Length: 283
Ligand code: AMP
Image (cartoon, rainbow, N blue to C red; front, side, top):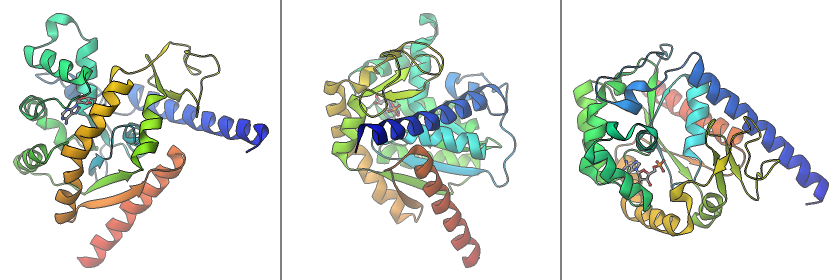
């Protein structure tokens, strides 16, 4: 690739990231759920609800950490109105909350998270069951980062039955592990608007500063090399078996996670639409 075509490719990616950030900010501030009920739990309720979706999509996103699930979740949520329910976001929100609001269970969870380890099932399951009302969200939902173990997947089935809703599909994003490790170790995130950059593949114009809102960029604690190794081992041991779990239930669809976020999004929508058509034909 020449320097000029490389610069051009970078500009195209930057423009695309700007669109994603705008979509994310729009979904946060305008017509989508503020996810208050999910992020805070307890008696918290969403002040801004998503528009009712017809039909609401109810999806689980699977894939190794760093495969781009969060970016795809933001796109799907902004375009289809589906509420983005990420267990990692619950922990990150707790980290930013007042110290007195953090329960002992959450403080323990943050320790596991810091080391890149999975938080024990009983803590995660308690947090999710306290938020089970979110599974009946009128916009539908996208579970991102949950379930991560077969035990969590079995518990999710029980909660969904209690809430009288069913999953439409489980989307598995596929990418070779060595590419994921390279993506994660260079990833930098904006502390305010959550835009994601990469030190080599998508550097900000000024090192360490977000192109979109001018805030500082940081490396997530769990994106450091020692944590990445632990997260990948955890993923292979605990999460890969979920692919078989959902394949047996005929819920699994696979999407190749190579290319730009927009291309991956288009592929995801095409796979979901094809599944809808096949389901309608078999009725
Ligand atoms: P994520 O943003 O999904 O990559 O999650 C960040 C971190 O939060 C993970 O590395 C785990 O430490 C913790 N975590 C999030 N979701 C779960 C889960 N379902 N089970 C166990 N740990 C989780």
